[in-house]
Length: 96
Image (cartoon, rainbow, N blue to C red):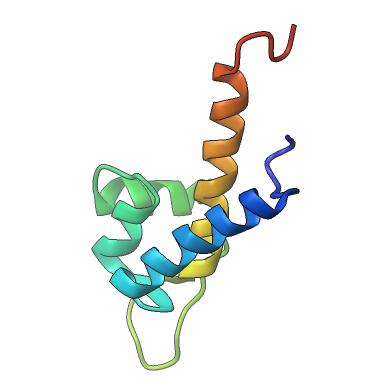
């Protein structure tokens, strides 16, 4: 698998992750919740990644709000891609 869902089960799993994240975080996430969702140990680490242009999802500003935000759907897709790539590495015989 190349990190994109290509079977019905993959799509259902991605949809399930997206639904759970949206239920717990809302459709748009920012601040400490965004940092945590992307796996950064602190908001300082997130800010450093922003400065280095190393944040793995598209982030944006909202008019009249401070900080950066991302769509929960983008976070879910990125997490699913990371999970899929990692699962591929753990599969016996994969990549040999």
